[in-house]
Every structure is written in structure tokens, then in C-alpha cells.
Image (cartoon, rainbow, N blue to C red; front, side, top):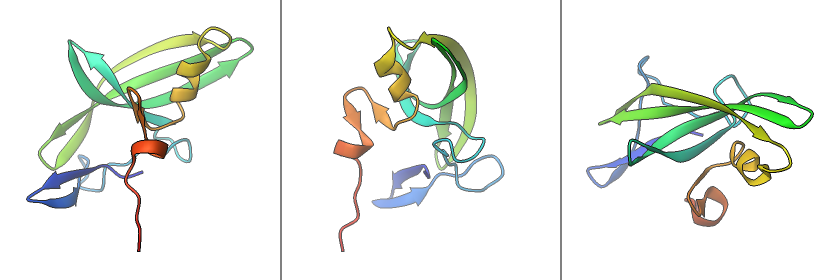
Length: 114
């Protein structure tokens, strides 16, 4: 999934440090399993999510802040943790989705209609 920004009333690609489109892979490559938002020092930030390992009863994860500056984006601070598969089922599901708070790509995302 590619990161876009509205600039001059147009949807525009956000580029990574290599000047290629900044993307999220949702588990299809090495770039993570989901996209979300997290409070960082009181500010809601865009984050890339990644399930790093799964065992009986636990899911290890990382969250990487996406620093967007104009039309470029770079990876920022990384946090990590472990979820319990019984107690944290909703949080585990979010690691493989695109959401921010109550908004999800399925219900609130952009769709293309001919």
C-alpha cells in the first residue's frame, strides 16, 4: 500500500529516502504487516506495524513512526512489545490491518469508482 498526501489539491506520492514511493506491504514483503496510528508524546502519529514472531499464547510486534516531511517520509522511532493471544485479540488483529482509532480502510478508505 502506497503513502499519498494531498498537495496543491492533488493526490501525490510520498517518497522514501531512496526517492521511491513510501509503501507498506501488509505482510507481502519485509516492510511490515499493518498500518495504524499511535500516540507519541501526546501527538497522533502514523505508524507502520509488524508482527515479528508468533508462538503459543504470544505475538511479538514492533511499531515504527513514519516521519512525513512535505513529500518525503522516513522511518522514525521504533517501539516493541508482546500481546497475549487471549487477552489482546483486537490489538493483534490491528497489527495486520489499516486503521486509525475507529476508522478502517474497509469502512472509511478511498475507493475507486469508474
